[in-house]
Image (tube, rainbow, N blue to C red; front, side, top):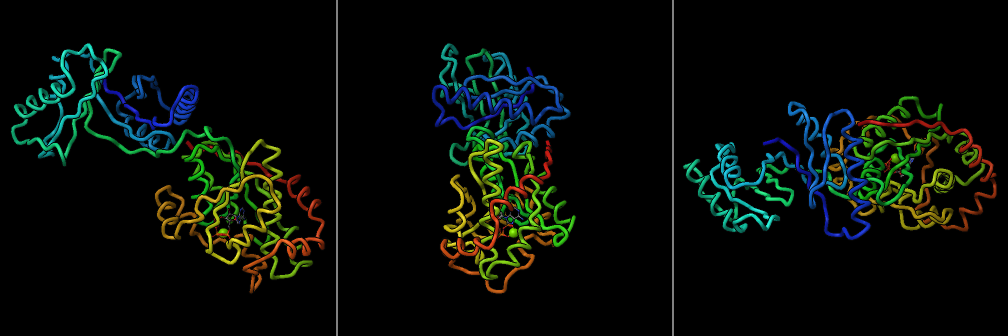
Amino acid sequence: MERVLLLKFGELFLKGKNRHEFLKLLMENISKKLHNFQFKLTETQGRLVISDYDESLEDEMIEKIQKVFGLIDVMPATEIETSLDNIENQIKELDLKDFNTFKIETKRADKKFPMSSMELSAHLGSVILDNCPWLKVDLYEPEVVVNVEVRLNGKTYIYNKLIPCAGGLPLGSAGKGLLLLSGGIDSPVAGYLMAKRGLRIEAIHFHSYPYTSVQAKEKVIALANQISQYCGEIKLHIISFTEIQEQIHKNCDPEYMITIMRRIMMRIAEKICRENGLGAIITGECLGQVASQTMQSMTVTNAVVSLPVFRPVLAFDKEEIMDLAKKIGTYETSILPYEDCCTVFLPKNPVIKPTIARAEHNEKFLDVDALVKQAVACEEILNIKSY
Ligand code: ATP
Ligand code: MG
């Protein structure tokens, strides 16, 4: 008899070579996440099993496992050699005193086992009823489900608790993207959501020191640290935007200031993507949230890049984004009051429906290529790792 952690992953779409890659990545990501612990990780027919670990550290391990994308549930379980005696004995050991109703769910992959799933469920049900006379069977809404999995490897797993994990796809299974990370609420959530779909993330932050403070930059580093718990190691590119903003302020129509800033941010982001093998740009934009987040604004900013721009919170309400920010632990940092470079020199009336023609006209008064090149040449890089 051994205490193990059973891990359930989404399998529906897994076929052929895909499945192998998916599992390999998932297992690597779990191992990285648990690098501070001793344990063994194996696969058995659609389940991963963590064994040989220090039980006193189980809660800590589970907390980490819950943040690995690609996993659906983690189940603390007892592993026993398959035999009816062993299963009965183990069932009698379960602590069910907090429950009034139960149900047994049996999965029997090992067809050599002499009882069918139904028979085994019924038999074990009566064992529990004998042993815990206060319990009743409820097949529809039981307070506790006792799961019995008779696997092909000669082992049976018994558990009655499923702890939800982050879901999604393993980090790295969908390629790599660059997150435009501001100090706000939306962009960390956007990064989390794309990482959840399997994108490995690098991040880029624009600051306008000394117009923006050192604390504003530190806040962004703190946010990168927080999402790194889910997104793994994050290379954070920090770019000075001061010179660019001064030039725009001096030379462009104030109405178009934000539009031009956004277009230059996009160009810099694309250059960094090309240099670092990243295939998409991610932003925390949300349709209609502010003047610079209209369909027309997005058309004008998209026009300067050829990589796809992912905006996973585009259709979310602010409350929905805030709820997610609270769930992933970024909210409290995001609401700290430091300014963002977008709020420096903020025009009174930013254009709501910009056009590409007028944006291009405004950019004639700037040496855009030189500004982009200069900004990237002076980038500061931090490797953020928090697991
Ligand atoms: P957020 O809460 O993410 O800051 P927001 O609602 O404040 O978003 P904006 O300030 O208009 O919206 O920014 C829209 C998006 O542009 C952000 O979600 C982010 O992806 C990107 N962005 C804005 N400012 C910066 C910055 N200083 N550095 C990097 N990306 C930025
Ligand atoms: Mg912002």
